[in-house]
Length: 96
Image (cartoon, rainbow, N blue to C red; front, side, top):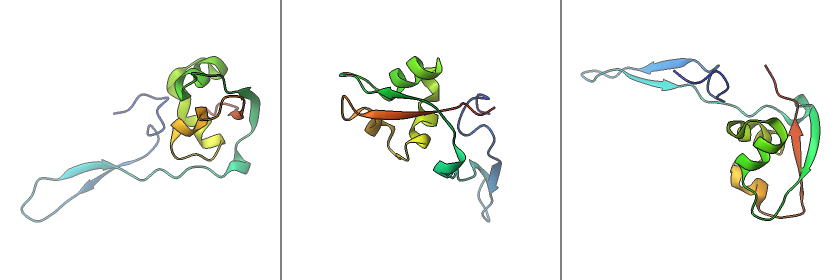
């Protein structure tokens, strides 16, 4: 259902059943891992005009991995990663 590198790839697909209605598949809730469980690969300095996907591309080689960077910095809105040029962003070691 999801690409293998998606943050949702390992989550189970559940089915909501209601009387008289079609079953509705949905993805189980994803919990952000505790910060202490994520090892740091490096830190990036946010540049003017940066976006989460650019930071992930530059540091991890894949813009779609922006969510890993967001997790490592305890932000729910990935856009917050690039709010302050000059700030440091933690880059996690990619998990398999």
